[in-house]
Amino acid sequence: MRLLLSLAFLVSLSFGLSHGQAFAQSKSNAVSPSVRQAINQSVEQWLGGRFKVTAIGTTPIAGIYEVQIGQDLFYIDEKASFAIVEGQMIELKSGKNLTALRLEEVNRIDFKTLPLELAMKTVNGDGGKGKRNIAVFEDPYCSYCRRFRTTLMDLDNVTIYTFFYPILRPESVTVSRNAWCAKDRQQAWDDWMLSGKEPAAAKEPCNYPQNKIVELGKRLNVQATPTSFVSSGKRLQGALGKEAVEASFKP
Image 1 (cartoon, one colour):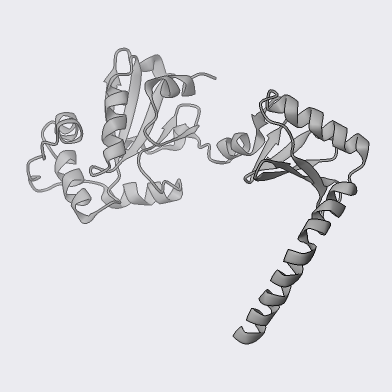
Image 2 (image 1 turned 90 degrees about the vertical axis):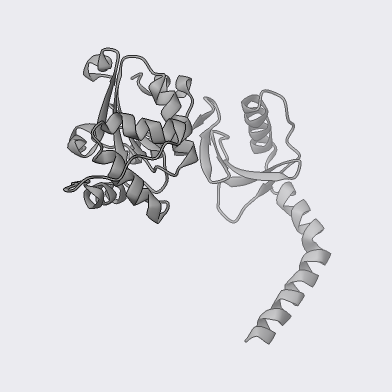
């Protein structure tokens, strides 16, 4: 079987080398002048005239065309309204990434259903009067979480719910548990995340809800930290800057 596959590959490679140029030319010739003009105008307008279309060719899908710019390829419909670029659908007239917008909706949650009793509550200023809430999943050994924690502490008038989400290493459970059961939970967590001061060993009984938090994270498809959700249910991924977080609170 492997020999047959190898022979097939060599034959196809030989065919491709000898016929590739002619095939590319035939693909280009198959595009009507009107379609070619529409695609050129739409793409160059979308890119602000910074790049020129190198070539336009047909594809095995009717009404879908291949566009080459330099060494890059993407695909566009015959009306030159939409493009598929690296798996993302772009509306050319507006420049909107329709895939990203749709994923934002798919990943949105109902913030009101979060079991906030499993999180540490922090109120900055007036707390946002119920409109500026953010829930964040943090692992104590996540360097990006530490950076993001600094950003969160710098926000005015916001209520922060922090889920101690120990998924990176076994020690994450120990630190999370000790901070959760500390006399001053907020101080213990912030000392560790912002200054690297390890919380003292928890006194028994310690009811850190590790399993419930991990189950919640899995249900919400939280695969990396920090992952956050704002009042609208919008998901924020990674250690965003202050301006990006502030923008996420806007309708």
